[in-house]
Image 1 (cartoon, rainbow, N blue to C red):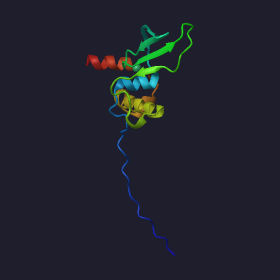
Image 2: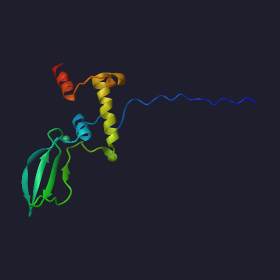
Image 3: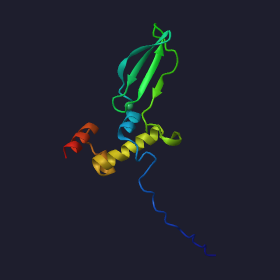
Image 4: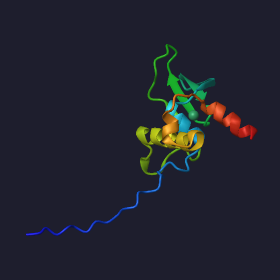
Length: 133
Ligand SMILES: [Zn+2]
């Protein structure tokens, strides 16, 4: 008895898009490689002392509060710039890396094969090149 072949449906692959497509490039970099915190200063917080740090890349601020002996008085508090938070808690660390790779592929190399080719170009060099053109 001949088996009937199933009808096959060709499914178009999804376009190369993701939840972070329009995400700010500086925010993506901070999420990917951490904030390059710079000290702004200290201020009194009741009987304790707080230290304010600011990220020069994305503008996020971090406050740590401590006793005079340096013991932390709880977790740090963050003030995020508008647009930094991703809706619905999205943006896992893997999604951030994936988006950074997608942009690197599209903007710096043109193809995934070229991305893996043994050459080095920093993001700063890319930006400098883009500014001068
Ligand atoms: Zn930052």
